[in-house]
Image 1 (cartoon, rainbow, N blue to C red):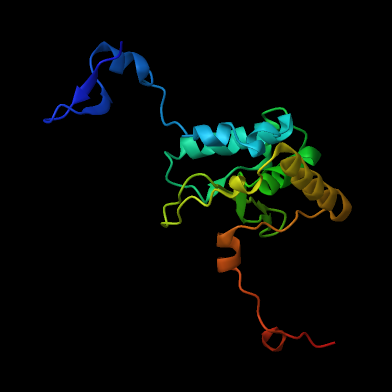
Image 2 (cartoon, rainbow, N blue to C red; image 1 turned 30 degrees about the vertical axis):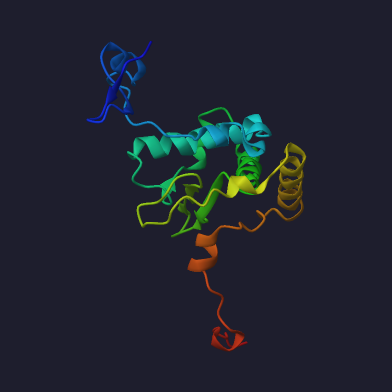
Length: 192
């Protein structure tokens, strides 16, 4: 029997007390952890994850833990870090497209060439967690109601990725809010 604390009126507060508190908590020295809701673990989006996508998600979650949970939305995970987990470079982008299609991860800034031969890495956001700039959890993973629907989303996203070499656009509210398109009249025209 686990003892819990009671308030002044004798009601249970669900706060574990005594030796059980130490036994049920994280061991000392573990560091920061990433909370994953039970509903997410039972969701169709989680259940259809491929091994590759799970490794990429693990790398993004590890970066979230390394930053103390303060950088969600700006999590930098270079491909070299993901390769160290046993994935080949060509399969990483498909795994990221799968995570986006399932609504588990949003790409907040797509990387690319920076200066010369240097590359700027992409930044990521875990959708079930809030961000430091007060964007609450978007829970895009709730969009798939069945495993078949989730598999269809993954198949569409990976087909787009294979056909064009580009990822399907994310349905993230943040992406839509931060990148307004300019009218054609405001675009710079280069002389011929």
